Length: 315
Image (cartoon, rainbow, N blue to C red; front, side, top):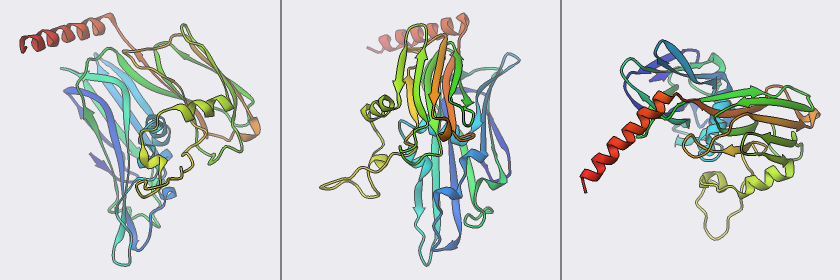
């Protein structure tokens, strides 16, 4: 499904198993030899809503702006393609720039859309989400779709967020139960000279940890980086490579579990901040969690057993 700046569009899926959606901005320049810059697309002005309709209820899988969702979901892998994108056609004296910026927003677990269910995706871009002086709004568009997957629905996943208020020195967040991932995002710092976070205390039923800003940086450095385009320049590495600065260098993954591997209950965050560096709407806590019923888990286990028997019969 495609939509354009200022136009809200919706698509619904009534069958299948899905684990994510992909959102791509396709931008064409207004003139030849004119480069589309990162600032010419504003993902914070694109609202993304994914809703599962089931049994007369509407479950909000995710409902936030594309900047928050995109940075959280791509922080570990794919951030370069979301922030900088692909140059589909380079600008020259004879060609207009065509840039695509793309991100896949993972739900956190498969969702099985069965009889009577609907998975609804709605993308609502503001009119100003693209710079009309540089980007041709009549030919540019935003493409979105759900991605099929193979898996068992063990519960309904949700992605939630809370903004850290401006100029505060401390904040407390209660994230609840069945938490599988936690991110701490910052959008307005391009370097590490003005630290937003002083320290973070995470407590839960089975896992407690505390982080200073120095420790957060050290853990970030120890994390595997799968995205070579984030680590290297515009050309493939040759004899020597100098690492580029991080994108969103003060954004961190605090906990990285899964619905089938590890989850936390009674999760609380206590964050100490350098208040003078905390600007409005530029720092966000994002977390992934899920709800599950006994019926969902039993049905999932029954399907797994059925498929195991089928696979054994092939031997």
